[in-house]
Length: 322
Length: 304
Image (tube, rainbow over all chains, first blue to last red; front, top):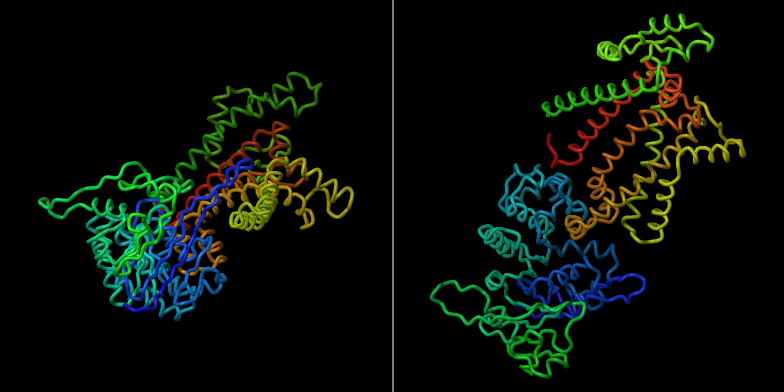
């Protein structure tokens, strides 16, 4: 792995203000609360966590589909968090996104030909004939054929649509692709096909992925490094192998213990968390995880946990390891 | 597709037939028209003779079957007052009504769609607030009142425009503006809400992620998608306009179908009323049919 990161996120925050009406104070939801991580060229970085922990918001904020509240987003060394709109538009060529819901994320009024040539067209690449040629090439690569070109999205199955969504992102030959739960809307049998497609594309085009998912099995299979998110924060970040072999944070331990075993005779201790994820409007004081943590101490209730640096670039946000 | 056209044509025939039947009986509730056409001191025998000549002395169901039979042949009878063919009287007014209807529609779409799209894009901004306030006022103000006020200002006080009648472009301005003001409000509000809906869709986010520009997103992506509900509204409004904007045409003495029908109704000139209703019913059904075909054109998910 290279030392220079392709993408560098520092203290990224995204708060949403909720207007409660004229007479109540505004409150804010801390969807992403001080997130820091790096993604190196050619690797697959996983972001995992429960629903509502802020992983999708992080992904979208990196691409400035949501405006960040504060923090740095460095892409190839350039801070893009404040980049003006026209420059950001040009940069989108290098950073693309694959969305979660292949049913909603394709424009129902456009044919596949239009959907695939549109990105090239808005960036002023190639002549119209060449664009169609590129669209055909990419269709072939994602496993669809020429005769699909003039169909509309509703004529395809979920897996095929996600292939189109991926083709749309890859046709610009980006450096970075943020895949926001790209397979969670698909049947299990289709999931593996789409994941294999993503892996093949990565090899072929030397892509870097930020892979957002709640499916630990998938994450273990395809990522190089993983960040575990809880209530808007990355509470543990490590190489995938290390994280799954020896999770340090109590939350990560509980998550990993919930991955189904692949063989019935395999025995596994299941850590069951009680309670729900607290509301991000009013997160618990101290460590956000303390109300559900089986190992919580007094300190956890009042003091914010420190960032603990372990071997092998393994970082944990926890008092237990301090 | 052929199935659909056939089915809709049959439906249109049925709708027209039902409309004519309803109006036939309704106008007869208003009473016998013959007395209106004779001097008040005409002797009873003359009245009877006149009624017999026009067929009003026959039982209503006989009059009805007779009417239906003739209507199928395209014959709505003669006007009771002018003795001209009723349907040709209506058709003679068509150009004036169409002129007014299409210019009002064009004007309102030209104003309403940009306002709707921009206030959706800049929602809750000053522009949006003013736009919404403006459209609420537009919808709340009755057309005849606005018409009279416009006549007062531009015709009576400023002497800039004629107060009524037809013939030149100048004559068209006031009625067009009056008619459009109501539609503008409706179209703008509708465009705003559908655009808001579309803007929150995932595929708009996809387009943004590809680097598609804001203008292109608004006018190429959103417009086509938000057009469908607007088409319905336009078809309904245009139907009303083409059927003759009765009140506005009367206020501005515009020589269109609406005024003709109102006058005929007051004179109990039954044949002209029936011919007018026939025309309006056909126009309405045809427009709705066209709207349905347009849906399929803008939305590939709809197939017939």
